[in-house]
Amino acid sequence: MKLNNIELQFDDFATEMTKLKNEKHFDYLVTIIGEDFGEEGLGCIYILENTESHERCSVRTIAKQIGEEYVIPTTINLWNAANLLEREVFDFLGIKFLGHPDMRRLFMRNDFKGYPLRKDFDASPEANMFPTTDEPESDFTTEWNLDKQGNLVATQHRMFDEDDFIVNLGPNHPSMHGVLRLQTVLNGETVKHIYPHLGYIHRGMEKMCESMTYPQTLAFTDRLNYLCAMMHRHALVGVIEEGMGIELSDRIQYIRTIMDELQRIDNHLLFLGTCAQDLSALTAFLYCMRDREHVLNVMEETTGGRLIQNYYRIGGLQDDIDPNFVQNVKTLCKYLRPMVQEYLDVFGDNVITHQRLEGVGPMNLEDCINYAVTGPAGRAAGWHNDVRKNHPYAMYGKVDFEEVTMTGADSMARYMVHIKELYQSLNIIEQLIDNIPEGEFYIKQKPIIKVPEGQWFFSVEGGAGEFGVYLDSRGDKSPYRLKMRPMGLTLTGAFDKMLKGQKLADLVATGAAIDFVIPDIDR
Image (cartoon, rainbow, N blue to C red):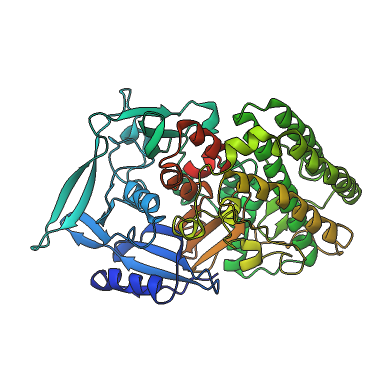
């Protein structure tokens, strides 16, 4: 979508955002994009969605400068998803959100100097030597507000009571699925609070994109989430193609849709396997990995990759499909259909599985929307959030498939959504595979790709939720600002809500049922 921003001044911001939420029902905060707008100053773009009509709008506000500091009123009182999203903007741009109770860095070390996404940031290696000391930790958070004289005032909030027992899960715990650290406050074995610590694999991808040409930026998407590489790259090439006005052939759209769904099956199979493994069920993991190999075999013949998929290009595909692709896909679909029931027989319908997952990590529909818990985790609570249905792209508006939703709103329902979505992916593929039209697999582009001036946002349905890319182009061969909306960031921000009052073992079970991959969160 091309952004036509609603411009809000600092003094009107809080009131107008409240109206958008309460009167116009923009109840889903898709993302917050912090940006250095040059001479205009620092500011943010908020992308909002009305979950009833699926209408989207974008709001832009420029931060108020007070001395050398920049401030914007918080929106955490309207959308809980703003918690980590605003901390991310503070971390990279230094904008303080007035009234936010936890203005700490999120990805960078607490002692990091400077704000990397500012245009005047000195990114030279000499100015950014990695410290050899341990990272300083504090038991306090900071809240910033303006006093009656307009001065910036800090208030300290204690994170832990004196008798709190604190356990760190991660950053090297196998059930964290990567280097994620959850600082967990316990009362006995009951969870009181969870404070996520991110950035252990942060690589500064969005900053690096600003100095790369558009084709060079594509390689990052494959390394964000190796289980959703096709969908992630689809979002990036999609936003560039929309900005350039490229019209793709039907053949490209058919093949992209099929590849996206093969990648979704790959993602869901590994999810089902690791969910079982996190609960100590090794056999189910082996079954899923066995069948995932068949999916990768089919993709590899055309793309050349197994772990890393880099098949999409700006304007189409890197090559046409393999001559055996159609037959191999049809054989795969025929093989996989009866296998899905095996996963339930071995693990999903086991009495222990039901006891470990039912009623665990509950989150109702209203909270899922408020915390932006998208994907299967949100659909398990009945939220119709599938981007393929609400904002169709490629061939998704022309194929017949069901959006799987449930009402359990717990970890068992999340597991079952993944099971049922495997069947829907097979349905989509089978509708398309015999009808791939003739035509170009690549629309030739100029040697140097430039996107006209403007701002765009393009979303796809990833394996674990909505993945989106925001592009601000100034007409050059490199993006002025490129922001990725990760699937897992808002999922991680919802752990505290999901797990309050649950047991420590339930944290592992909930993490198993929430499909997150750490490089996607950290970028």
